[in-house]
Length: 284
Image (cartoon, rainbow, N blue to C red; front, side, top):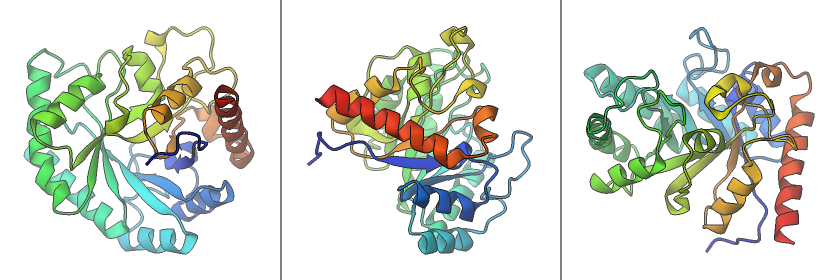
């Protein structure tokens, strides 16, 4: 049973510190008091493999590094365009799922088409259900969870957690799929539903720039959560925990100013402290 008085716990997504290799990511997580991490296949903006990217680290090496550091790999991020199912996508899904199983990762993040295509009513629902049906055996055979992550951008083919939840139910996928609640995308989508019972992972990041409208916000604006946050991360976190979510809050800022931090450990520690203070104040 969830202890709703317990403070939130945190995880570290490699996108927070893409300049670190995988061993460096795991070591930083432990210094921060975390034992859960997310690894990625998209660390470099130009598409080339980063030094900690799973494309440059064999799965057995990732498992060894995680075991030595005492961390759990909670997900691999990500199978892109998962709801545009093709033979190539099927092959990519199987390859990523094989890596996840061999590395000891628990889940595979599933990211939808985000280029303005596949948005038509009827079309997007069919595409989503087809992809989930095809992914079910790939994931189930390897003992993995598929983490469906709606994106709030206006051009995205899957913006709504409600649509994702309905599709998961329609394909009887509750044992294989969970949702990602991303505080940035939840805000941009204008969605008021949380579905804490279906959430398998929470991504957190803030936007501090006061000049941006929600429609103008992009990944490049996503920073560590602090007192200037415009996304009301702390209220979202409280709602999720009160609803029964008991998983980690995984830091996932994309802003270059975060990636360039000379002392990321200090800044991430400050963000955790801010969130914990806000949580404790609300609970008092």
